[in-house]
Image (cartoon, rainbow, N blue to C red; front, side, top):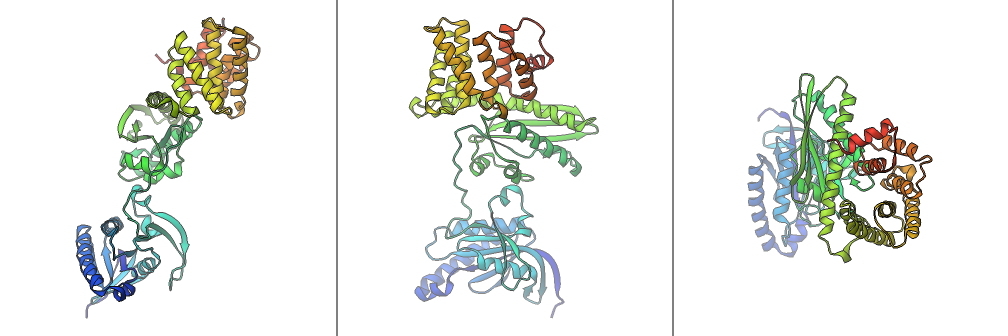
Length: 474
């Protein structure tokens, strides 16, 4: 008799769902399938550095030194069994104290894993909260929180996470989320490359600030921090992020510190192809951490937002016209709007009008229509100038309805209204305020700046000068 050995380990408990019923229905077929399962399970356990410590005919207890190995082994086993006509496994995983004595194994780690296995769906995996907290972001994201469960003969409730079930392939990728109409983007946690855990706050702060800044753009669908930060600390497959979160673009980056200097790199990636669309690096001193974070955030956002806009316009250009929604019509209109000639301006106006008809409440469509009409009045000969003025003013008013929310639509209406009315009363005060509030909204700032050069005779305010520097830094 050997002395008991106590240690911390990850335990995987598995059994065949409905084994007795299967034996009664088809004993020969069930035993043949069970032999095949034992071999497959043995291979998977060995491949993930585990050890089968107890076999009970239709059930197994497997010990791992790593929860990651235990979970990956379970996923592989369930993947191999997906679609099997006879055998379905239920698996539970927990990390806790276990005791080896002679050829037996017991302890809380074993008991909880066994109870988790009992509540798991056939073909599924049930994971305790303590086990899930040991996983990296990508692996943890594959499990759904189903709340606290009172397990049989376990004193305290256990928070449970599940994957797969009801015969589903537990290792299958999630069904991709449908992409929203607007361009969608996730900002992943920035990697701390300094080797100093104390710098995590700075890396996380940069990513959080970029999320907040991008969220101000009504033209973007930005994934919340709680979702994107589930990938923190693990190797990230960008195309899988796109499927999991339903995004078209991903921003990722890293932070490296040397003494009082810090270097931040950032990349914008097309999540569908994993192609890099933009990348840059930023250096600074840590004399004022918050000021440095603000500067870097603004530089990243000012680069990322126009790049996404350009990519979206190119993507929409390739779609059949009959399949365009209001937002896409605006994007196609912008590709003409920015060419600054009479023919393209007329085409932009036509597309913006289609967008307004399709969605009368789309403020940005009204705002761009207003600005394009006002530009046509200013530079082109129109068939009916009076009618165009009325349409531009109406569009400007409609686009500015949500000014209190600082939407893109509200920000773009001022120049149109001013150019039509030729009345500067209160106009430049609004311009100052909007530029102060929307320093990162590059496209909108350019409209104010263009109007400034057209109309303002002198006395440009500091806010508008800053707008000009942001819009045209070269």
